[in-house]
Length: 196
Length: 142
Image 1 (cartoon, rainbow over the protein chains, first blue to last red):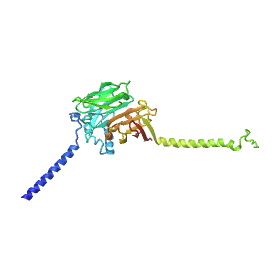
Image 2 (image 1 turned 30 degrees about the horizontal axis):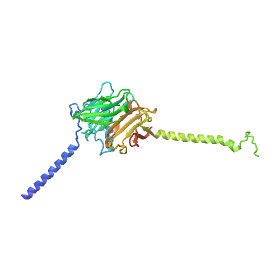
Image 3 (image 1 turned 180 degrees about the vertical axis):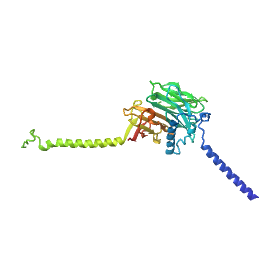
Image 4 (image 1 turned 120 degrees about the horizontal axis):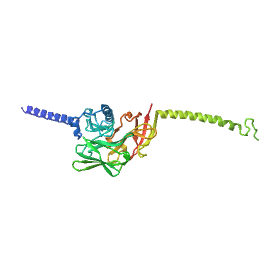
């Protein structure tokens, strides 16, 4: 009887450890990117699959080149359109990755970011000869405002559906962007220096 | 006393008078060969420099410049900018993308150059300056 109890106890312990390991493994493969848009009913409704696919290939290449620090496998099934500002040729799309990063693009040009308490936004600055300079990116759920500091003049970016976008006027260039400032719901301002 | 030669009425020594014409031809031929070889090599594989501090949206060459951020160019706080560029032969830039994030994960992608109305071969560049973007690029084109 005592042997049976001992064996049963050991087996229970082993089962418990094994279950914890499996659970941890599952959890690490599905990190949450802090963006509610990917759990919204229309997640995965991104238009222009070709742009998304081309960008996803770049993301896979980055991951292959640096498996430890790379962005991870693109979850293109959740690719979603965040913004399509009127008066611009831009459509801002994003998809999460298996490592909890978020990759985002405009016209197929993009990058990936890792949102967190100290980095509530990730951004890119795109210039094209025909449409000028745009600042665009992703914002975590608790971001309430994104401002572009143009030589001391603060301009509000369009912020909607976890994405933001601001198009510079023709008289202004990317060199005039001093900072990008995001404000979170607790009132904190997070400042990214561009050209201080 | 030097004898005058009928072939050199100007009293120039014979050897000095013939050497310039053959010598010049030889030099010219060698220059042509070298120029041809250099051009052939340059058309196949060449390097160029680009500096982001040049006048806005100018600089570079007629090729796609993909700036890969390497750890040795990161700033002290562990964050850095990465830049991808499509440039034209006149030095203007067709499209650029700047991305900002942690050094180890920072990459940018401009997508096919046809998205911007041009077709160029991809190039790979690396930053060799610590605090700004000085690019040295290697590329091949058909």
